[in-house]
Image (cartoon, rainbow, N blue to C red; front, side, top):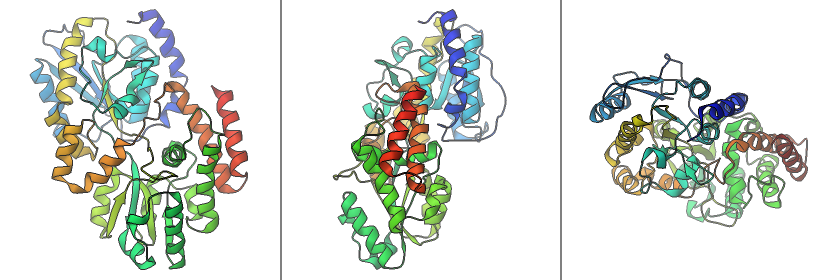
Length: 421
């Protein structure tokens, strides 16, 4: 347990990096109110609960589930939904003031920052069993050998493809297994008069999120942005634009605008996430999904998105037993199945993934993609990740724009990342 005085100093330092953390957010909404940690005892009373889902009012299934888990634990839950970036700053401030909520749901890259600030308990302190969770998904909430919270689900990236465009170009999707075969497919698509691939190469966390599968798929590591493997990934993207396989718009594309390009029906491939499935089904396009290929073949590691449910530090540690019951209820197999179906997430537990695929075969490639995925803050990067990511997106942006050769751009990115840490 970190002493309150120490925790206050750490939180104060963490508040300074809110701007960087805000870039990690994957969800957005509007602020719906404020929360204050209850001083009731662990036996009954009110437990406060903050999450990044302001879009859900008290009639939503998620809100009903939260309330139900509180009732089963013998308490009343006071739930507040915040915009994701607001939630991070409010959690840091509450930790500094000693008024943290009992339960906190946050975007997974934020977990290590809150943990480093001394705001979160470990799952061991909470008495929470994590053995059923998939190790690579759980890793996003781990730092220095400790685990801080558990995932409620995961999303990631894969390649959507337009079956009609590929058929007209004479491309068999089964032949696309590595970078060489993907490039060959893109060349055929261009020759047929259609466009090859669209993605988000914007200079924000969205761009880094989309670059990472190619970066990791080349064998690169975030500790060295100037490696030959990192240069290979930047070169791949740059060559796609030079060859006309990808449009010039990718340098400014968000994940939303690149998806809108795919929905025109002119593109063979779109790099995007599970959250686009509903839109794909409604689009009328004949589409499929495959994992993003690594350079030498196989599925590349894509970054995990999704939230963790964690327990902030409380001065009254007697509250933890009830908090553990609430968290365990939320992440039970039956409740995860409902929640992850609602959020279009892949479950973080293998048995629930099996149930999801049985109910919806379209999730099969997404389960495979999540199985190969990595947390952005894994490998003990923690609070180093935001500055590395910012340097990285500066690197591939300079390469895409042609202002620097890929090797020079990634070398400069590594220099910037090292200086900022």
